Length: 170
Ligand SMILES: CC(C)(COP(=O)(O)OP(=O)(O)OC[C@H]1O[C@@H](n2cnc3c(N)ncnc32)[C@H](O)[C@@H]1OP(=O)(O)O)[C@@H](O)C(=O)NCCC(=O)NCCS
View 1 (cartoon, rainbow, N blue to C red):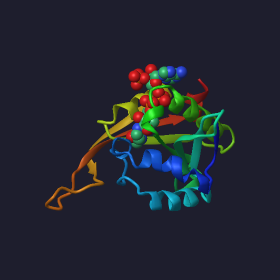
View 2: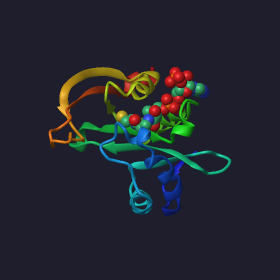
View 3: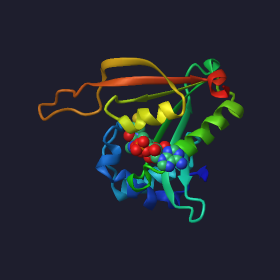
View 4: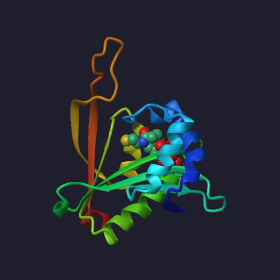
């Protein structure tokens, strides 16, 4: 089930955002409980973060991010996703991303959806290819999120993926 975040989601959010293996490729470090309380409130007031929950228990097992890019006239949206490691490997990310892509193309009038990941993040690009995204580029050392002990940036590569509305339909 996909729904909006609520402030009460902070515990389940903490369950996965406090896991170093989950945030390894994210532009942020692990979250504390206090940060998750604020983050759940922030996300519950935003349109771009969607909570993915188990149907029976409403347990939050991950989130999808879908945000319109600028300029808006290009009708391009960015997709992102982060799932609790205990709920990876069961197809939940595939199922929920499909539903969000359907929604973006049919209800948000998206024309093109893009997604980016580190080439070392195999689970992420495998998910994008399962969803029939096309790899459009391999950017070399274009970005960094973390620095080494000397304060030097740790540059990393990016895979850029995209899917057009007509490709999604076919
Ligand atoms: C990226 C991420 C969401 C992918 O999660 P995932 O669990 O691998 O993806 P899915 O839920 O689609 O599951 C696919 C796996 O489940 C298996 N599976 C089982 N049942 C399935 C089903 N009904 N449908 C699809 N896949 C199924 C697939 O074979 C696949 O396994 P494999 O990777 O061994 O081939 C997850 O690794 C993650 O959250 N990582 C941390 C955050 C992150 O890095 N985000 C991306 C930043 S760019």
